[in-house]
Image (cartoon, rainbow, N blue to C red; front, side, top):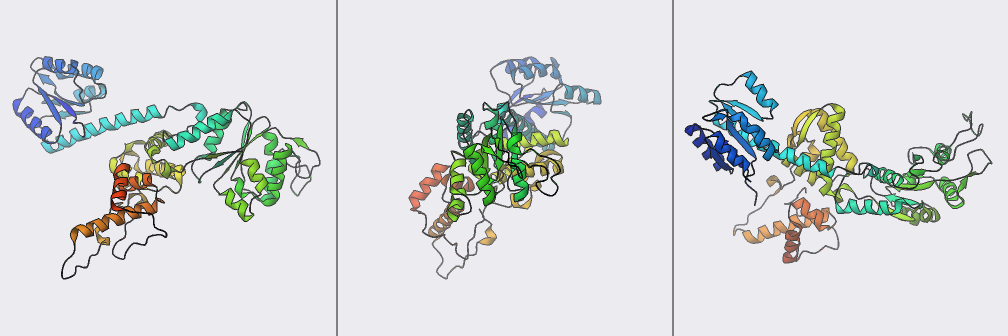
Length: 476
């Protein structure tokens, strides 16, 4: 059951006090009223938790502003609205400096005022959420800002820490945008080689000849344009770590040369007969299925086993959706600072859309989205209307997609509803590869509720993909 928000209403005018008490109570708030400053102080000094204080400036026994320091001491997260019958700019400025959420001059219209109350409490919740998220974001500097508290991510981080102090080769797998290089940097920073260089090279971004020269260097005159000797990444990373990103894109010829460097711990620059000793730790990463590539002959089996001494998998964002809130907060803070914007956060409906999205581009996709929204929105709270179409489309069932042909004898309503529910569940399960946790997220159900429904209905994974009927299609 949702906890009621508590409002302290300090107002000596009985008509104003009665109307506000009745209307605020009707909106589901727990309202405590007081007519005197002294009485209000006793409420504040008690163990009462206050979410919002509405205070008349002029009270029979003093100035309502005198209550502010006491509220800030006992309920530092509470918001305050000050009421007055004689507002001035000076008073408004003074109130603002003391942390008052809004300064309202009487008489005022009731409907806008009630919306102001809702907005003040929403702001309080947003501030509280931001504080909680910031406490979660106090990451060890050696973890290179790997954001997330999900079990899936923490298991990966825990393994990375355990293997960091060895000199063993690590193969980091995971989809594009999951943060494979971040975990590689974390391993380097926690390793005995942390005082040495960390050198990265993307094996998929360069041609075969360029990549060979980048990795092993070249001798003067070894090819057109080689006007000087040039050190390669193996040399530059001496005493440190060499990160080979997208190693699955390496050509067969270079695979042979890399294998030799790993086995013999030495290499020869292009066009040189001088053998140079290799003193690097290799961390490799790929988004490809190297085992499948080995079977198809596209990747050397012996090199695969040399690289895959310790496998480490970075989970996809759809597998760790509980981290989305932390990531959104991190990126909003980052781009507010970088772009000089003032985004306060993301509202509940927009956040639900983000949770429903499948994130094929993973964290990189989320980061790009938040950067775009921060620049375009500029300030305020991000809502569904701010999201691009592919994120904001209605995840619920669109009634227009359901067409029912009623026979003359009518239909069995309960049976039809049951069949409809079965199709929703089966489509969610099919979309997530029968991952019940992810299906529950799509359906916004508790995992136990979904499992009970599956058992009760006797739903089983079909041999072949289930094709929905012509009258029903759900875009989950």
